Image (cartoon, rainbow, N blue to C red; front, side):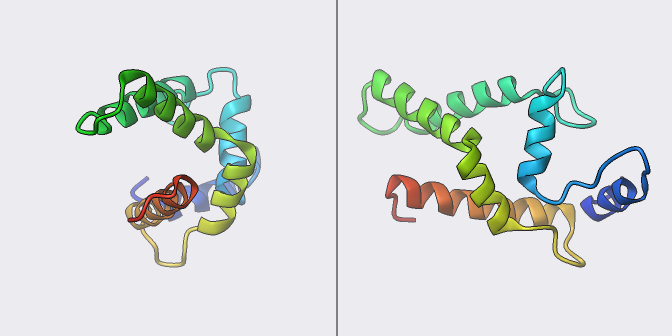
Length: 126
């Protein structure tokens, strides 16, 4: 598949798969799958959570926080992103891919929205 729209079109045309209407439904299906892995990928939710926690921790390295404070904040960010209410809000805010929106543009739009939501949640001016 060359873009997100083609993937969505294939899902809609497949009689054996239900159409996912939003990001939250997509995440719920991954969480309920036996392997908890992303479609057509070997990435799993637990491994992504560990990567996110580690990445957040590393981003805080230049700041004068203790390692314990960095770890706690990193885990809080990771947990928040998996929170049902947060996922629903994020899903509602990004909606479905826009017509003529490429997969890269949709991911970029979603990333920008997620960043803004995290900034708002943690009181970061960005």
